[in-house]
Amino acid sequence: MQVPFVDLKLQYQNIKADIDKAISDVIDETAFIGGKYVKEFEQKFAELYGVNHVVACANGTDSLYIIMTMLGIGAGDEVITAANSWISSSETISETGAKPVFVDPDSEYLSMSAEAVANAITENTKAVMAVHLQGQMTDIEAIHELCKEKGIHLIEDSAQAHFSEYNGIRSGVRGIAGSFSFYPGKNLGAYGDAGCIITNDSDFADKCRMFANHGALKKHHHLMEGINSRLDGLQAAILTAKLPYIIEWTEQRIANAALYDQHLAGIDQIITPKVRPNSKHTYHLYMIRAEKRDELTAYLQDKGVATTIHYPHALPNLPAYDYLNTQPSDFPVATGLESTSLSLPMYPELTEEAIKYVAECIKSFYNN
Image (cartoon, rainbow, N blue to C red; front, side, top):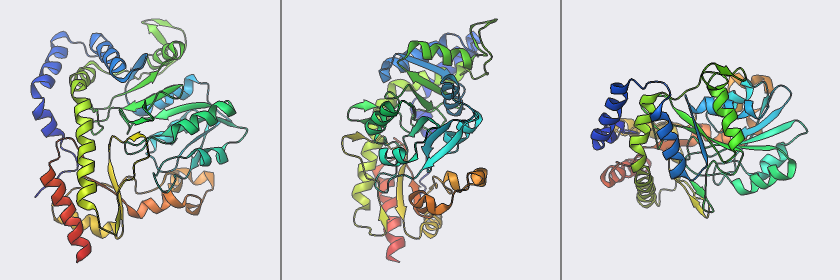
């Protein structure tokens, strides 16, 4: 059996009429930059997500940079973020002129803890970028209270946590703003790069929107210098066409994760994802920790099962951050994930037959 890591073609085929109409409408109206399709997506995503403002932009990486820049973060400042994330989380900090400060995840849920954040705060700390990884939120309430107490900004990187919840509160709404990526493989994905900022602060939304559009809310009326980070009409229309399905897709991911839990139970050589109490884990990734990870990966590939490693290197262990003079031993959990983490196929259309096959292959590998 062949089990792809994701199957975006199958998803397209299932909603082909909706997607084709969305693309055709944009082409018919040549509404490629800005316009009603971008506004429609912003309004519908805001309504569905339960926030006041959505500011669409070119990609999730830009959204982080825009948020920090509009908060005035720059040279001499420090921003605390996760050691076990994608480089967008940290490189955007550096792009502002600030210094990224990495914290190791907890060993249970593999996410930032308030305790680790508290230990990393200095007099130069301007913000905490809480990263919600794999679809599970951090202990965001405790981090939020800590940020309020210390008078520092809280930014949420929700690129992997669309519609995730903790204590009934969705990702991205605790801090001043949340950042989302709509990269094709995300739970809500475009057909190219796309992203957005969410916030309940009207003034901050205007500032972000202005900065993302060359510093202007109205053409030729530039109140500041900005950047060019606009969501194009085609991607906006595609995302709008997918929105009616996202809640159902999310529930199917959760159901598929439960099937993985069931069929992988009893394999002592792996650790399946642990869900934080009172959380809604939306399973952008179903990431296990596995003994003999590389050998298992090769075995699964031979059996037709595609897997991915998120991420081969903890951020502070990359050459890009040699200047911080940290050691892998400073981040034991993140460093340990380099050789043990393995993301299994996960998408809404995944069948129980495929999940059972993946589990049987893993059992077979360890039994042999």
